[in-house]
View 1 (tube, chains in turn red, orange):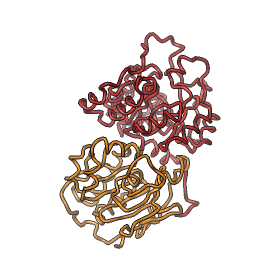
View 2 (cartoon, helix red, strand yellow; view 1 turned 135 degrees about the horizontal axis):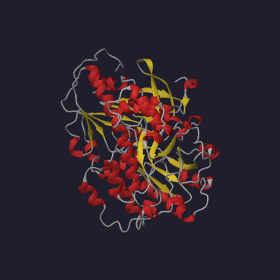
View 3 (tube, rainbow over the protein chains, first blue to last red; view 1 turned 60 degrees about the vertical axis):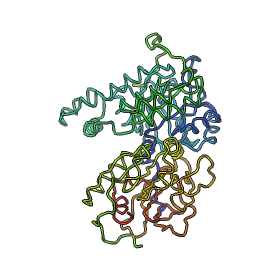
View 4 (spheres, rainbow over the protein chains, first blue to last red; view 1 turned 120 degrees about the horizontal axis):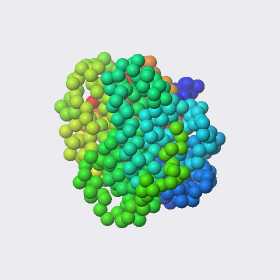
Length: 298
Length: 206
């Protein structure tokens, strides 16, 4: 191998990393112990945080990148990939996370946005990014900025899957509606969606977005996870749903198995037995607008 | 055995389909790559995803894709597939996480016991974290031009047994071997847009 030919952080390498996560569960953790539990349960990656979204929600104030000490502690504890969150538009938090060696950065609406005009230019980084989206236009704008993975936003920290379902169905139906359009119609549609035309044309041809698409935001039970898989997700992020449940070890394993056997109701029934209480849930319609996280980013 | 003997249309022994272990990871890419390779060679072998142990014995070959090795290994055990894969007499095509799973032993790894399909010792995440993942042209024994190889949090082989034929080595260790009907790779030929590794497996290894 000619060493000067080595190429790092290419689009293929970034999207390839995301692709290796397919069919997996990515779990939010706030300590080395929790990371170990997630790895033992079969998580494909962990998201290193100072607080899970449910606690960020109740703490209020400005939510920022986690303490690097905490992130390194979690990286040292497990052999699976470790992800961490940066604020929307906060490219210095992202630089810090990259220098720590995290495997993927989540530019996340769960933290308080640092820029209300621009997201991070993710093409400038070696490390891949995942970004949230509620609809096809938002997903393609993020991909155009360099995101290697999309997750539907849902409403984090609520234990209520309704918004994740809404966002997933929205993207699916927007993609289906592209069928049969010719290129000139797709270019017009791209303008309406405020999405780049080339990415929309690629999406129409492949009948899926050009990168891996996970679901997130409110997944709290094995059935919730399997629901998102049956709705066409490539995998799921589970935030507060595991470590805010009564028996995190059992819940973590059960959700991994439900994602593996997403179309086998009898297996989902079996793994759902005796898990104790799932995390307490919130009614989305009772949330005051300033506490809604999904509308952060655009 | 020379890497390329010109027998590219030799019919493959056995009748069953090629199965891609579909527990987690880069499954659809492997299915598509094998389907294209089968078409190119005019072999007419079906390619199917495999999730249950009882689907394995009838296969011509089993591909173990990239993904997270700890996750795939746990699901293999959870789904009662360990013994079935270990006693499977057909071909094995293992990439990246698949290499970790197929190993006899792992260095510095106590989280799980690999399947011991090939007499190799493997170092997981030998290159470090994701920022160290890379793509590069790789010289492979008998393959010309070199293969554009994609290494993503890749493992390397630190020891290969006497019956294992080494096909490619880089500074960090061995990255491609063949042993009987098994082809084991550190990198991801399923996303290289180059079907030579899949075709080599179908025509020369099986």
